[in-house]
Length: 248
Length: 246
Ligand code: HEM
Ligand code: SF4
Ligand code: SF4
Ligand code: FES
View (cartoon, rainbow over the protein chains, first blue to last red):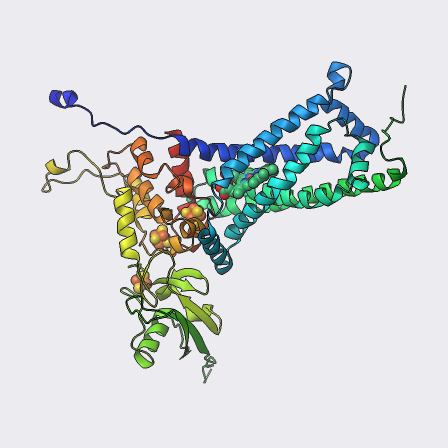
């Protein structure tokens, strides 16, 4: 046995950990973006509780409650971080897009022949991801460049008089389809479900994803309609800022 | 009961892809055949009826006609499946049969899955790796294996290499170098085997990239279409977690 210990160990090729890291980074960036968008929906829909509630949330993000006065630049910083995350995620996901016409053609044929929900769902994710690349970036850039233009009237004016509802309507649907499918696929991609229970969990997660997407679509639609209504009423005074009703 | 009700039998219209790549004049085309359905008819029976009664040149593969050999995989109305285990009564009056995509076409419905599987096995080295194999005394009793472990390995060993998971996988259809669920499953099978001395960093060398486990995009076509119901999604997620932890 002693001789075996002296034998030189076979040279082992150094392993390339990057494919593993990129796979984790893709899932992690997706997960963070999903958590972000789900949180974002609650802040955005503070308008449903009234203009004062939304103003309070706006001020909170500008640090007014902690720092004494609002610093809109904090919103720019947050938007820049999310934009960076979106860029990272998009770059990583780009690796999974069909790389040429032949792959695209085969994928198309495969998806339509299979009539298989999960395959179709992934295809929807690729398409919505592509659309998000433009829509989400556009929205984030506006927030990044005009952080002071957020508020009960400023936002409503942008939505109605600035016709941003044309962007936000499609963005709402697309981002929640993408996020809902994404979270379902993340669970199955990594989740340690034992084989006998995989079907059960898969069904549960699918149901949960349907419910969550439906909930956020309702919440988002209600908020968007509210912004549009306020914006329409406020249109003659577009540009004016909201003054809280109860000023001390 | 003095008369047993007789079922009305259908006449099936089966559209089959005809093409022989070895014949330079052959153009791929769909040919329609009509077959009278019988009780408990499988596609295996229907195809044999066509070959015996209508067209002796129709090419397709069968060996076991019992879902064991894995040679009769084909695309049945868009989805992969075993012809010998598919009952015509589960299909509409008219349906289409295509050869499995992603494999070399021999002729008509016959594809060379064996060649693909061999390439995959060589690429993933799906055999027991041990340093002292030459010194094993074949006359001696083998080491006993824990029955639970033996069962786990057997569960994964049930794969018949039919190729349905490759035809069902969007990734494999897009990327020719993807080893597919069949390959990833076999890696998890050898990883379980106590006789195999490879560790996770050895396995990482084999599947730690986009042609291996990180290429899988969790479309679950394999899981849903595997005719042997192998736990593919569970195995792939497991392998992904192990490979990330290397
Ligand atoms: C520029 C915008 C975006 C693009 C181009 C994009 C593209 C994609 C693509 C193609 C996939 C599928 C990748 C795969 O199957 O491996 C994907 C997955 C995913 N996306 Fe996006 N996406 C974008 C924005 C977002 C946003 C805003 C969210 C959050 C709401 C999000 C959440 C996810 C999640 C959770 C996954 C699953 C991750 C995984 O499979 O590892 N994505 N994305
Ligand atoms: S894993 Fe299933 S579908 Fe794939 S080759 Fe094996 S038996 Fe066929
Ligand atoms: S889960 Fe999907 S991508 Fe992964 S091997 Fe199965 S069918 Fe292919
Ligand atoms: S003939 Fe053997 S699996 Fe169908």
